[in-house]
Length: 116
Image (cartoon, rainbow, N blue to C red; front, top):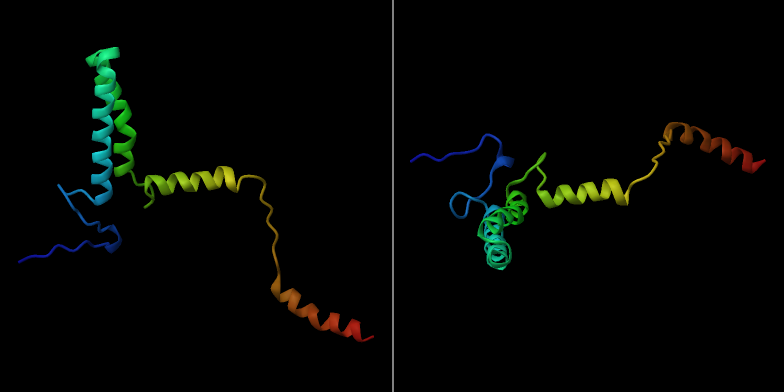
């Protein structure tokens, strides 16, 4: 019996169905549901061929979100990080250094001045 072990433990992900992780499987099911719903809603008003193209366009973002990873971040985490960077914490950032050693050296001088 042979047991496969990843060289990098952090790269391990548990497969649930068809070799997909739970996240990938859920997003795939969601994409299929969106595609089927869009097809049945749009096939009569715009025709079957156009509806099929719109189904693919509607389902693609959900399908991509399940498989997307960038520097170990999932799609939602990446969007949240970009939102924080560009909107919540946007603006000018000033760098102020603090020299703790200098502050410790001046403490006895301040105490000496207060005594006088």
